[in-house]
Amino acid sequence: MTEAPIIQIRGLEKKFKSKNGEFYALKGIDLSIERGDIFGIIGRSGAGKSTLVRCINMLERPTAGQVLFEGRDLCSLDGRDLRLARRSMGMIFQQFNLLMQRTALANICFPLELSGTPKAEAKKRAEELLDLVGLSERAGAYPSPLSGGQKQRVAIARALASRPKVLLCDEATSALDPETTVSILALIRDINKKLGITAVIITHEMSVVEKICNRVAIIAGGSIAESGLVEDVFYHPETEAAKSLVMPEALRQESLPAGRVVRIVFAGSSSLEPLVGSMILDCGKAPSILYSDIRNMDGATYGQMVMQLPDDEQACARIRAFAAAHGLSLEEISHV
View 1 (cartoon, helix red, strand yellow):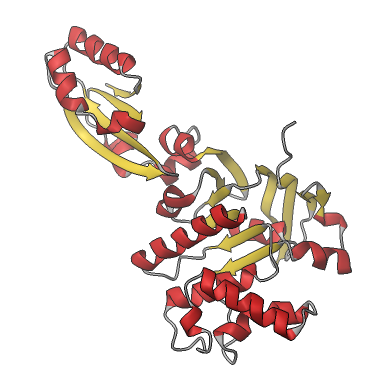
View 2 (cartoon, helix red, strand yellow):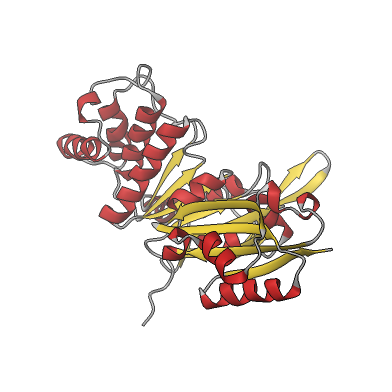
C-alpha cells in the first residue's frame, strides 16, 4: 500500500484586499509533497511562493481550498489543535529572525520554553542541535558577531527544536554568499537523510533547486505552471513559465541561428563519454556546437548540448540514429 503524501494541497486560493479591490495571490494550487522529499518551489518575485509557504503552516489563512498535513486538514483547525500541528513544521527564513538579546543556545531553547519543556531538557536538546549544525563552540555567542552562515545554522537548529516532520525554508539562502549557500544546502540535505525530515525549499534561484531538490514546482502568477522530478522539469519544460525560468538564454528561440538546430539531453554515464568525437566519427560530418552544460542533480549527472546540424539529410539521419542508439533524447528546436 502506497503511503499518502505528508502534505497535500487541494484547490488552494488566497485572496487579498487592496485599495484597487481584491486580487488573488494564489489560485487553484494543487500539490503533493511526499514524505522524505526535498521539494523545491521556484518562481520569480511576486509569483506567490512565499504566500504559499505561509499558507502551508497557516501563518496565512487560505481563502479557499485545503492543506492536508498527514491527512488532516489544517484549514479546519484552530487554537490549541493548530498550535500542536504547527510544532510538526519548523520554519527558517531569509533574515534568520534570531532574538538578538539571546545567545545561540538560548535562541534554540526559546520555542521549547514556550511549549513548556523543562529547562534542563530544553538545554540538553539545544546542545544536541548545536552539535548537529556544527556550532557547539558558539553556544554562548550572541547573534551580532556571528556570520550569516552561522546565524542560519542557529536558525535551522531552532527550527528543529520541536522535532518537526517538515522543514519549511523560505528563501533561506538568499542573504548568503555562494560558498555559504553550498554549506547550508549540504546541511539541509544531511538533516533530510539523517532525521528523515521532509524539506520544502522556497527559492527564486535555479542553482538551489539543482543542488538539493528531488522534485520541483514552478509557480507563476499565483498558479502552479508545472511540477515533477527536477531533471524532467529542467530539461523538458512544457510551459512558457517554466521555460523562462529554467532554459538558458542560448536556448531561447530568438537566440538560435537560422538552420536546423537540435538539443540532445543525456544522463548518467552518457554524460562522461566523448559524445561529440564519437558522433563525428559515426556520422562523417561535424555539427556546430552552440551550447552545452553538465549539472549534478540529486546526486546524478545530467547534461544537454545544442547543435546546428550539417546541411546534409543523410548526415542528419545518422546523427538521429546515433542518439537513439545511445539512449539520448534528441529534439528539434529550430528548423528555418
